Image (tube, rainbow, N blue to C red; front, side, top):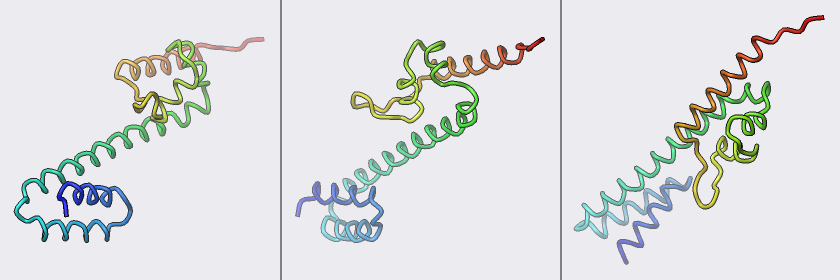
Length: 134
């Protein structure tokens, strides 16, 4: 039995819905490799941190989607992509949805968030100052 292989299996179970298998694998590793407790703890801390980072990224992505839900019903996101970012609608939706593009998750940079906020405020001013007269 190889510790590295068993830790990889433990990590796989950690990220799966099979909590019982995770607990069984953890107990097996603790019994079989008690002398390497520090190495085991470091590995577990590593994938728990990865899990926390993934959760944080998911929350950020969900927050953006929720914040844009009503706006996207009112204002064309294609318009925002083209007018304010000089990009395509697809580019903007990839960022909003956190799609994997060229092996990396598409995420908004701080500057892009500022541009998006400016776009929404600018559109709001334009709509607010528009008056239809006969």
